[in-house]
Image (tube, rainbow, N blue to C red; front, side, top):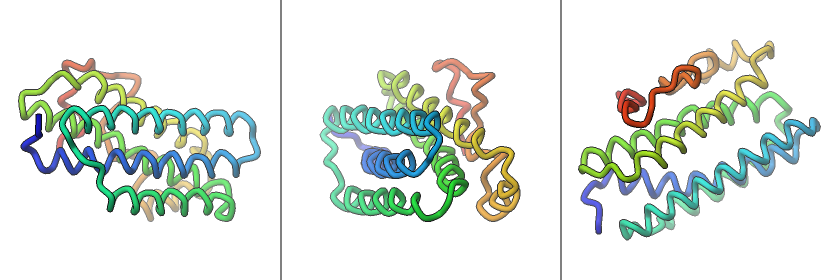
Length: 186
């Protein structure tokens, strides 16, 4: 079945390639930190990103969506650049920008869910919800690592993320899948 929803098709293609970029970035991030607990946590986040990429590929196969060569190239380069930069930009910035990135990624999966639902398709709700929530867990992890840094207020003003998020999810007060349409509505 082909999807008759150009925004959804594009979002799926972009998410697939962006997950690779994120995984590459976390490879460098994990290698650049000295704290073993941080290494393990970031490695797990990398694994989560590869798992999300595999889940998105299942959607692509089901709806005959081709991999975007442009997105694959673009996000491959971005991921590798970020991975390498983790060794030279210090400890704070990789954590900050990872959290900021994850904050926006949360809504990719909820927007996919909204788009599918607008087509009357609900069978992907659970997996999209779970991936969105996992991205939120990543965001919370990264913010937790830097919450006491003196740099955070400056970066919050400059890049608009920190104690305020790009999504409206509170992990302590999660809505169930069936009531999650409230998330990431603009």
